Length: 256
Length: 201
Image 1 (cartoon, each protein chain N blue to C red):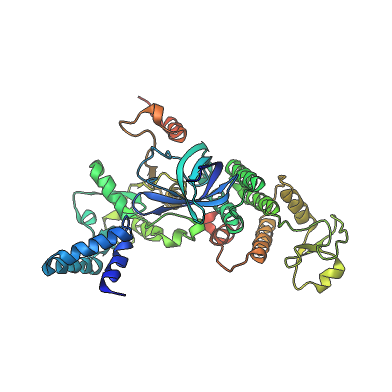
Image 2 (cartoon, rainbow over the protein chains, first blue to last red; image 1 turned 60 degrees about the vertical axis):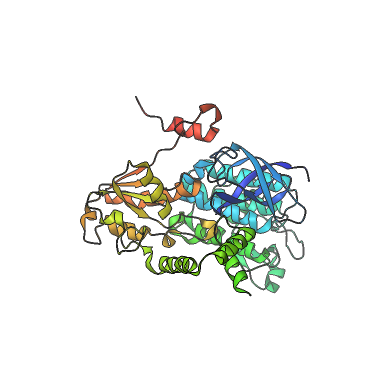
């Protein structure tokens, strides 16, 4: 029997399984994204405690078997619950988006940088004022994409690598993977004009820095850019439910 | 596929029943008198044909209205909102609550694509506005009894946001230490919530 995998973990998705168990999707520091079975998690709080909930963080002990997609969760000691994420629907929807992004891209390989980016994004969202929840989500999402190694290029042309002045409006091309110069922009299949302020925000978010954006029009444009970028990099057409709610559903605090 | 495999496959879809148990149950049924298996089959068919959501509260019932909605002794001015019909049984077993219920049919879950339109929130609002033209137009309190999970809390917050403008009192079930529990063994989040929700004595 393989020794248990003991690692920091964050619950990104949870659903009930059979009468009293739950299946969780965790992002872990040393094992990437893992699906685990938490036996009896709904009925007995003895093993996992009441805080084995969405977006909770703690030390997980996993029983793994080679070739199996579903590990068994032996224990989960919560170090940080994030109940504030349910304190406002904009935070809740933003956290769902962060979780969906991570689950759609991450694999079961160790990635401490990604783990820290997810934890930081959820913490920032949990402490964000409701009106700042959209830009906290955008910041977290772009930082996660950067950790995944698919950050867009924004300071030089993604095609010819020519330098592009940060004080100039640039065309963002999803297929090219970032902004493109005027010459390459003419050849790009499609693109969006990226204002100077939007590029500055993107640069800061990719670096893990805060950059407040409160204008509703700018938030909507950033949400669209992020969704299109994510779609461009996904290998399948499965719907992005959490993105959809975050961007469009009034109940989720989407920007009017 | 043989009849044995067929039944074992169907039984193994039930919660808590794996393939081995399903086969054991199948062979057990084969050993029973034909009358008994026929009664079981008939009961299963009847279940699917007769049981449906209550027209008012979405609890499961065989009538148009469930037994709780029909009961004149229940306090129709208080509605307890729960996620699933099975939650009603848990509250009823406690024997403390005398009001009526409303079953949402789930909870908000953006990752699963479940939003308010997938729940019975609109029907609840109809009830509260007296849309069904009955005594429930005089509802004075809505108790939100969704699960104390993050999704349950968000769902409660959403329903509260919808109900509050109607001027109806909205309350949330309390959370904290279980009766008979030991403080030493409670997790930090539960203790924190119990302290936050403390009451004066």
